[in-house]
Image 1 (cartoon, rainbow, N blue to C red):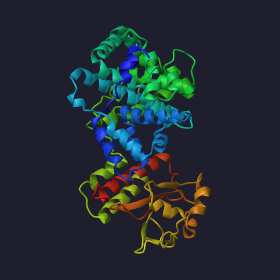
Image 2 (spheres, helix red, strand yellow):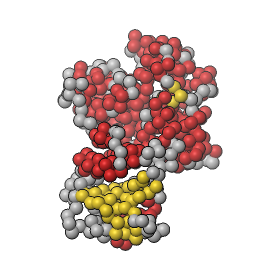
Image 3 (cartoon, rainbow, N blue to C red):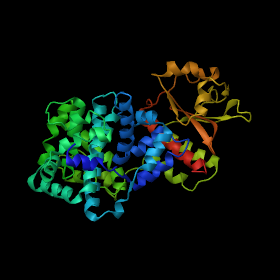
Image 4 (tube, rainbow, N blue to C red):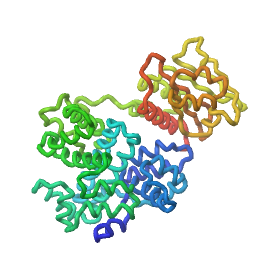
Length: 463
């Protein structure tokens, strides 16, 4: 390793104070789902580096393939080891930093998160099999520059100013200031940091690389250039390459990039970072008012999670909490058909205690299910992860359902979630859309999981 790679590898990258505190609390709870953990990891490159890095070092000891997704990393490490990693990581409070490293660190963090958002969206557009690994790779690709802002903020600032005055990309400016090829420094961090090996290709000098490495390079270049304006010549010069990568018309591809930036802007603003969407108002070719979600005089409609968070705040009583949850599942996700199956006193049977949106003759209304140790409902009661029953997995899961539930659930896509109070299972929630409504999607399932997690936090007084 060169001198700079050694210096950067010698210290762990500290996690942001808010995300570190939140994740430290989550990993200490038995009912935390993988999705809740992944949601926090996606917001902080330091946490992502610690978790994926340790999982890759462990995988390489046993000569396994690299781990590139958080879900795989959590499964490999196990919850106890994950808790040790998270709680052992140093914490960074940006408010205590000097103005120079604070401004630089937050600017690089915003650029890194925007690159990750674009990379994942492009992977979805290209129908890549594991789109989230592109987000994770772009997130990790920003870690070396973040580490440099903490290790040598004056040199990092000097490189930033040089990139502005001479029109250089930040990698070129860093290479000049540090007197060492910056992409090579980053590539030499792959082994000690436990980064996925294919990031070496992202930082390689070769012009011809794999499609996934090319996508990460493009996303990082776009995020760097649009920070100074979507309408600049440097930003516009990327349009043909992005369109070619996505196999889309140039204008369509560019609009997709802008929409992705706007949709991710709220989270960046909340964390005190400046999103590139602020610069869209100056673009002459914007086909719609991209700055509208950022304009205080015309605030965007609250997200489904925000819409639920306010009425749950300060609410007590399980009936009132469940009432708000069901109301918002119907209003925000269109889950009009909802059934609460509650355990009886002996915990040997589930019975439909409440149903909404179902006609009187619907078999789900009177569903009564005796439980056995091998059926799927019994398994879900003892887990914390909801299940999405849909056309692709119905053949596998339907035989595992209690016989009484197979008929009612044989046709419609269904979200099935365990309900817990005071840490103990009390029943299951079945949620469906009407048969003539749009099909459920992965985004619907993500929001369903998040809304259930929010309600469980309110239901459980120990949290």
